Length: 101
Image (cartoon, rainbow, N blue to C red):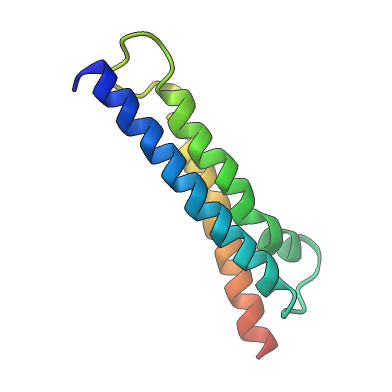
């Protein structure tokens, strides 16, 4: 893959993920109001997806930095950290909603 094509593709993916995850995070924030979660699980339900909305795009953007890059660098690991926050946030929100029903 050519360097300019790689960076364009990665930056496009970063912006796309950021937009979708922010919308999903705001929805989870509102849905958490309907639960009786407390402590870590409440925080995870409220902020987990929003933290992933920072980490996942950061993984895309920072992994493409550098002149002539045609493959991601080691900062791509931020994607996996963001995925962990995303899964934890969605599961805690879902379980909280099921328990509140």
